[in-house]
Image 1 (cartoon, rainbow, N blue to C red):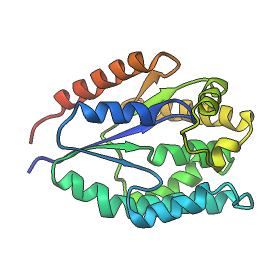
Image 2 (image 1 turned 90 degrees about the horizontal axis):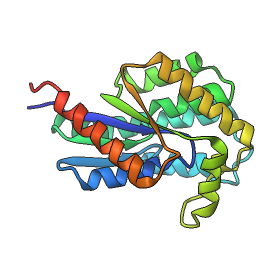
Image 3 (image 1 turned 30 degrees about the vertical axis):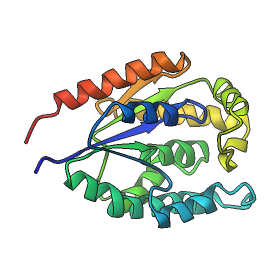
Image 4 (image 1 turned 90 degrees about the vertical axis):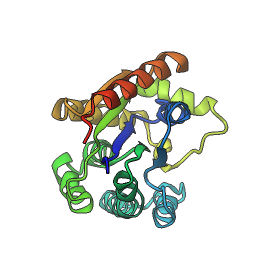
Length: 210
């Protein structure tokens, strides 16, 4: 049986990755769409705790551990079985989010948060990752205009925090150049979608058949 493909979509808040992911999924077959934190019942419960706007007292280490816990359950219950079935998985966020948000922006250290997540994922990394890059001010502007979008605890952080998130992602692109592909998300949805679909189709075509 052919092993599936694990594709993750990453980016700062307001980059539009969730919208683009949905559009790409509509053009593909044998695809599983999921998200982090969440994707399965236990992880969705953890998501509600992490992103609850009332949980302002949450310690950064607690936050990082909760993300890793949700990730572990999601991985073993949903992602791994789908890969074994040969499916293409489109996942909204994965380990890179923890490294950028908690590791860099929260100041816990990328290596420290990487260690937590290595325990959780057991070296299970994406086949490739599409990173949607956008200036934080523009991303937050988009969020404020989109009344239908869920506003969570991280959206309420100040602009400096979101700048650090973007800086963290740029560090990760330098660290994982063979896996992470950067897309300019400041353009129109159609332009970003078109480039993203081309990337996904090209990478899937390059994948060796087993």
